[in-house]
Length: 449
Image (cartoon, rainbow, N blue to C red; front, side, top):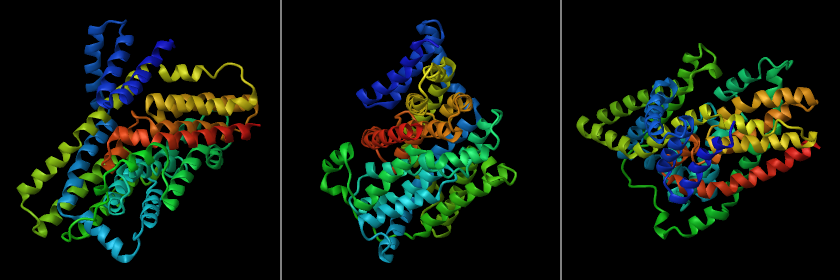
């Protein structure tokens, strides 16, 4: 409960922004957390840092996500090697569905809305699909990363027919709420952050205007950033069939692992199973069409996995850091800050700000939900405030950090899927997230009044 537990996440964020090196920032922050946990002994802290990182693999879900993130590199490399993505983009351009920057951006945003079942799938599918499309129309990869990230967590917390909904429903049990499902549904129109950031996304897609750091970044890009969709070789099926296998595979495996209930399925296992099936299909398709030899395809796949190694390492350290912060009690300290006496009209805004702070400094939305829902729901029932309002404040604030924190796995994955430098993505997206957060804070205050 000491204020010292706030130092590691603050250190991670400051170092990441200052040194432009997320891996170094996470390593230093994990070391700082472990030193605090082991009586300020640097030697024990160093050894505990190594133990904390290796312990990530003991968690099956974490190991599945790391392996999935590695194998995604192989799948993307094979699709690029066969020119499948560029062929699909050419087909869209020929059909007139993406002939302008506006139609290309709207198509990308709508695809992200449709794939709401799993956040990793949404990021991968949208990013892979739209890279060549954005290049063709001279839109930056940073803008694409904003699209990918915004149609990921913010959409998943609004369309709750997924693992997010199951998780939150589980947290709502046991507090005397008559109908947790109705409470969860009623929180959707009150989730002001998710709605505001989506409004900014569609404003950007429709008008083509960008602001702040993103505008400065695109202004400084060389003219060569606007490229054609690729060469004239390849076939669209080399992209569409693997992607369809991935999408429908995840749905099928979610049903399989959930015994027929989609929202009860195992998301991390499903994405891993699906990417393996998609890889096998892609290899078989390319071998059948004699695109290359088996040895050459294996080499391409390994090169693709190597390309994603920095991102996978960042994910590994992010998981380890989250574990350190949980043991350190950082999230609990944030929650305790709002446990004092507050005017009724301030409770929802303060809970929203606290959720923003926890999620941004820890990089986890679900961890934020687990910490603050047990605080918010009893508080609502005690004070007479509407439970959906306080629940929406927790969910919206939790998504804020998951959406823009440099140590969030969703933010990292959006950078990966868009082939965008991670810190450029964070720097160019943060002003949009802060603007949406400011709107949400005002609306939570007005709703409380």
